Structures are given as C-alpha cells and as structure tokens.
Length: 500
Ligand SMILES: Cc1cc2nc3c(=O)[nH]c(=O)nc-3n(C[C@H](O)[C@H](O)[C@H](O)COP(=O)(O)OP(=O)(O)OC[C@H]3O[C@@H](n4cnc5c(N)ncnc54)[C@H](O)[C@@H]3O)c2cc1C
Image (cartoon, rainbow, N blue to C red; front, side):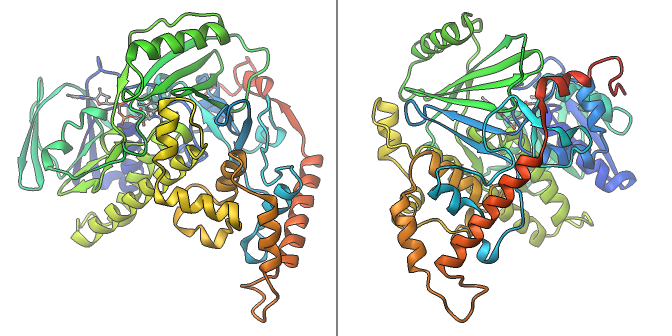
C-alpha cells in the first residue's frame, strides 16, 4: 500500500484526495493535513464544464449537490467593455457534428452577424429544459467556494484521513521530501506528498522548482473580492467579466448572492486607487460600499515541472493564471488526472514523470495563450491598456494578423486546442473585432477544389457546410425548450426537491 500525504484541504487538496482514492482505492492510504483556521483563498466560484466530469467520477449525485449548496448553472461568460461600450459572449456547448474539413457553422455565423455555433450563444436567465433530466451536457456551475469544499470534505470523510494540524517544517533529501513536521502530529512520512497549500507553496518550494513567470504579458497581480447578498428575481446563467480602465471585475451569481472581485495590476494602480474605483463600481451597480480590507496578492506564472521526486504541486501551489476563463479548479483536476494517467502502477518511472510534466506545461501554455488573446483589445485609454496593447505576445500578434488577413481555420489552431476549440477562439476574436468579413470571403475564394476533397474542401463546400450547420443549430434551438434558471435551481431546494 502506498501512502499519500496531501497538505491543504481547499479545492485542490480535496480534488486530489478524491481522485487518488477513487482511482487506487484500497491500494493507497490518503491523509490530508490542513489548517482548519486557514480556509485558503476561497474565491474560485466560476467553473468550466469539466466540473461535471469530476462530480461524476466522484459518484456525487448532481441533484444532491444542487440541493445542498447554493450552486447555479453557468452557460458561458459575458465580456463587457473589453472594447468600451461593447459586449460579447463566450458560450459553452457544441451542437451538431463537425463538418468535412473541421469547419463548424462559424463562417456562416460571422458572415451573417449572427453567432450561432453554440448551444448557449447569448447571456440569458434561462437554461435548456433538458437539464432537468440530464446533467451530462456542456455547461458548468457557479459555486460557493466554501460550500463546495465543505461538501467535498463531508463527502470524503469516511475514505480519507483528515488531520487538522499545521505543517511547520519540511525535510528534504535531494529531489525528495523525506517528511513533514506538524505542530501536533510530529514527523509524518509518505511515499508521495502533494502540496496543495495554495500560494504559500509550503512543500514544493523546497525542491528548487523552476518558475515560469508570465507577468510580463499578464501583469494583473492583485484581487479584491467582495460578496454581495442578493435576492434574485431572475438568475443569470452566466459569469460577467467587465473590463475597467485598469483591469476587470468578475460578477458571479450564486443562488443567494453575487461573488464579485476587482482584478488589477500593482504596476499600474495603487491599492488605494483600486479600492476607490471598486467602491465606485459597487455603489453604481449594487448601491453598496466596499466592506473588506482583503487584498489577494499573487504573481502570474507556474512551475515548469509540477512533479519533482515524490512531490506534486497542485492548484495554486502549482501556479496561477488570472481567472478570466475560470480555469483554477479545473487545473487541479487535470494535474492529478495526468499524474494518475501517467503513473497508473505507481512505479514512479522517470519517463512517466517527464511525460506528466510536459503535459502539464502544455496545459498552462494553452491557457496562457487563450487568456492573452482576450487582451488583444487595442485599447490605449490608460497606462494599463497601453501596456497590454504594446506588449502582445508574438503568438497573439500572429493570430490577430491571421484573423484579419485570412481566417483562423480549425486545422491551424491545433496547439491551442486544450479545453477550448475553434468556436471558442472565434467567439473571442469576433467579440474583439479581429475578424474581417472581406478577408473571410477572400479566404473562401482562395480555397480551390482539389482531388483530396476530404482534406481540402473548396471555399464553396466550406461555406455550404457551414450554412448547413448553422441552419441545423437554428432548427435545433427552435425546437429546444428553455426554462427559467431560477425556477430550475429553486426546484432543487423545495420540500419536493432532491434532498440527499
Ligand atoms: C482572485 C482569484 C480568483 C479566482 N477565481 C477562480 C474562478 O473563478 N474559477 C476557478 O476555477 N478558480 C478560480 N481561482 C482559483 C481557485 O480559487 C483555486 O483554484 C482554489 O481555491 C484552490 O486553491 P488551492 O486549494 O490551491 O489553495 P487554497 O485555497 O489557498 O488552500 C490552501 C490550503 O492549504 C492549507 N494550508 C496552508 N498552509 C498550511 C500549513 N502550514 N499547514 C497545513 N495546512 C496548510 C490551508 O488550510 C488550505 O486548506 C481564483 C483564484 C484567485 C486568486
């Protein structure tokens, strides 16, 4: 039996414990050491569809999860003012089969100013009625961070050995952690240690890991979070990300409140100025004042190797890329899943470790790229936006040129295809006005008929199949029923709901 010691019982620690125990069952003993007085950052409340996969893997009934927490449904993100006075939506949900050559309905959608590639293609307060029977679709949840971890903690209590204790010292021999020393439990040894201690990176930092700093391109490094109790008449089924003159603000609807937070860079805004701006936003939008002194500080980046010797860093301990596309919780899930996939026999081979590290790096790089694309606004109305406009990555510049001159076809986007497909990239590119109809028409005209039709469809074929997909989706949408998000969520909380 292999012994795992996880330090940290916020979402990264709990996800790690749950997945490891679910996979190896009685072959492993899993203990989680955590400091009950330290609840972690407690702000990650917007998720992506993979959270459903996690809940399914853990055998957690969705109905029980919904009825015991204030979770709501998320169909996508509304981006407001990323170019001032405009809005666009990045929705989840594929519909219809991919057509020949991999082009979806986007081309027709863009040419006709009606983005219709997605099940959820606009921000609303409704959700598909099919969700009442089937939660296997491509949507995500808005969760209350504390409730989420409390729920997981209670759910796992029987299978996992939870120890409320503080780690005070970490003992290292070369690339391995030999033991940790806890305030009450004394010396604790293990075959594997997992560092899920958040930004303190308590264990992993002792292994001399190489940090990949992303702050030149993503300089935001501060967050001020504030919760706002709220009585919803209708419940938005989307996260709002509103750009400000020096960063952006998240607004996440949970059943009984909004979670909001102001993201800014200390290189361009002082804490006092940020507080003042955020206060003004809170007053304008919610008629409430800023009620917290809390400022979360971090640096954008990640450890190039997340698995060194017998230790893995997971969640914020591994790194952090700003939460514009809500990837934090998912990253913990993916890091541990990759570890499991690469090391199923727990033989701990160097080859497996290298593979896992490479994959993890690629995941962070893909997320980094997608996030930097959101900043391709060409805004210059503040020092922050000027910097973002003048400091684009080479990849963003190339992507931008490609969209403006030709078109971003799916087969040429293969690197970034982790988590998001072409439809996602195009929703952002289209929302930020990178796509130019004239170039798109020229691009289609340049695609000639060639003998290898399957690989090289002509422009006419691409256009025709894109139109067909568009019409299929329109038709599907016409026949789909949408119900009030609030009514659906409330139904889980009524006496007749699905109380576990
Ligand atoms: C501003 C901001 C916004 C975010 N928004 C999102 C979002 O919308 N969506 C999303 O998916 N993610 C988001 N995230 C990321 C998300 O919050 C994290 O992925 C999530 O909270 C997991 O954090 P963690 O478990 O890695 O660390 P933490 O939450 O910081 O937990 C650390 C744990 O370590 C324990 N610990 C620390 N020191 C010791 C010690 N000495 N001894 C014992 N135990 C110790 C603590 O008790 C705690 O349990 C956001 C993060 C930030 C900073």
